[in-house]
Amino acid sequence: MTYKDLEIWFVTGAQLLYGGDAVVAVDAHSTEMVKGLNDSGILPIKVVYKGTANSSKEISEIMRAANGDTKCAGMITWMHTFSPAKMWIHGLMDYKKPLLHLHTQFNKEIPWSEIDMDFMNLNQSAHGDREFGHITSRLRKPRKVVVGYWKDENTQNKIAAWMRVCAGWADSQDMLIIRFGDNMNNVAVTDGDKVEAEIRLGYHVDNAPIADLVPFVEAVTEAEIDAKIAKYEKVYEFADDCKKGAEKHQSVREAAAQEIGLRRFLEDKGAKAFTTSFNELEGMKQLMGFASQRLMAEGYGFGAEGDWKTAALVRTMWVMGQGLPGGQSFLEDYTLNFDGENSTILQSHMLEINPDITGNKPRIEVHFLGIGDAGVCARLVFQAHKGEGVAATIVDMGNRFRMIVNEVKVEETKALPKLPVACALWKPMPNLEIGAGAWILAGGTHHSSFSFSITTEMLEDYAEIADIEMLIIDKDTTIRQFRQDLRNNEVYYMLNKAFR
Ligand code: MN
Image (cartoon, helix red, strand yellow):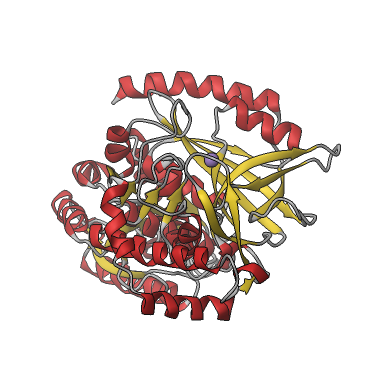
């Protein structure tokens, strides 16, 4: 179990119509199922069986308890027998956490020669789950529906993906994002409605003057810096002019002080993510690029130039990907490489890419950065390894948040001897023409949150839980259909508000 402090509750719908024996059997079957799910080794969060719910009162009590329990990150419901769904109305209206409706059956196959009316009274999920599905639809309740036999890996994998999203969602409900400086002047796409973000997505965005951070960096001792440098020497390669005693080593020491000071500042505030700005560096010796790389690798969300939405999503991706190979990073569409069907986009930023996405040993280099007040900056230089991943963003469309996901294939990058930055080279699916075209039509950012670890399915689950718009660009995307989806969504979100 990866998320040790969390639980997913399992509630079985039933009723008392079929007598006490049926309820006892339902309870025994549910206990066995929950044990089987927990023992599968596939689910990253413990499932806790909360018993059968046989009346409106019982259902409301369970839902209220789930809302109030900080360990409970979500609920799985399953209707073993027929559970009349009016009983679920008040409870579901109260329920505020992620919901997964599991459409399964205790026995795998029909016992053809044995089946009788007692069996039918007990094993009614085929129609019981449809009754429950009706009321969740009628209430317009966001949820994931998983259909499949509970012992099948495919079924368990779908539950596992959703559980990871529940963990990410729980984490974002008290996420504090610290911003050093505002959004880069005049930039539209990285900005948005922070009040709506707190209502809809849970996180809180606070400004911090860089002057508040400066004393934290200045308080770092030489001994603390020495210890950090010793650590870096173990895991990174040093450019010759950055090694101890060489001319640029002092800049690496300053970057180490920034890392230590920034971490203390964020811990002090209880922040999970942060943004920086190259125009907000009064009292700093360099832009905190190296520190941002190091903190991203620890799980802090990061966005450059005040991009708080990307910072939050990078953090959420880190939580969702816990224990999975790969890693996630803040990235930016840097420059294009046209080559027919193999056209690619170089992904990078001035400094701030997470070293978790490389298979190589990152190299510490120090170079002048001629933008804003960045100065001479240390950075980790590397190239992302090859593989498949997802790039995602959330943009503010004025009346709603829109998540855009593009599946991408990361390829080998050629050497960039005169561009000393960390980078990735990817081909957006299905190709650059459609991938980038759809992203631009959707109004997607030039910044994105990228992950090798998490899947489109998880981001779909996230958008469902958050109840925000979702657009997916994958191998099946066509521009014609995508444009129609955009038009349809405009109408949907206009009417959707009126319904509620
Ligand atoms: Mn940028």
